[in-house]
Length: 176
Image 1 (cartoon, rainbow, N blue to C red):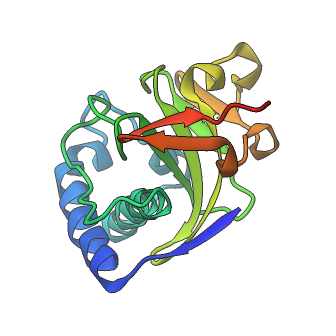
Image 2 (tube, one colour):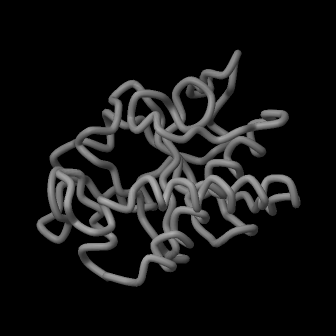
């Protein structure tokens, strides 16, 4: 795992965009949209807690961007599944649990690479990665997960050292 601690600018961006996302997703929080928030359904929580989770998720995206050397990274808002979270093909998945696993939605883009990040703003651990299409294997379906989702054990993730980035795209490093 690789530890990343966000600088003051990235913390500020995480807070600002996290609050913006929480307000944008207020109908989802209230349960009046078709899009489900499984964490909220399973654990509940106040709107303030919901906003804190959005802040931490944005921070996780910033941590991955920092890991890959993006300068002056600005997280996106409003591009839900239309664009990658970082670069051209990185889907960032965040967990609060120190032993958290990678949770993939059926609507995540198959061509992307999912990266698991754990922690709370400003301190994160980048755990590992797997191509999204591999995450959607039948062996990762779980009756414990609601909806069309897949739970990939962290033991099945590949190390971050196995990824290369070229012009905003990540690729698996060739192993000779």
